[in-house]
Length: 119
Image (cartoon, rainbow, N blue to C red; front, side, top):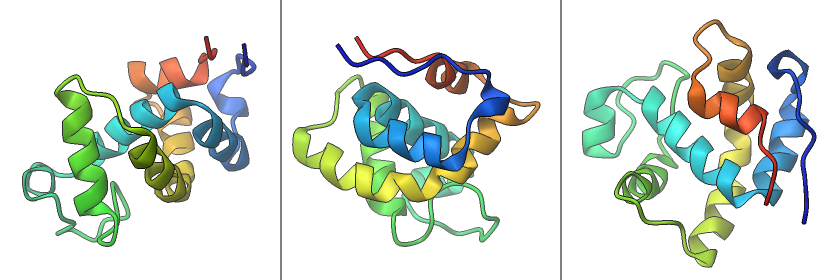
């Protein structure tokens, strides 16, 4: 039973987030949803990146990761193969995720990740 330390969100580093994403399926799925939520509405519906605002998925990852986010929103978990590819892509969004956790607009998803304990 692997456990990650409970941390104050202000203590998280980008490297901590990368490690968590590599080892926790729950954190990976929640993080995909968090970054997807940062996409604009038109980017979400088209599964592309239209606004180069350094928020959300980049143009290379938008189609694949947006499709995973929609799958998760529909209550389906990621397959082992999807997790493998998503882990490789999501580590590059660690800075955005840490920023979500430490910013004033930190939400319940990031609070969950911050307090996450693998069961």
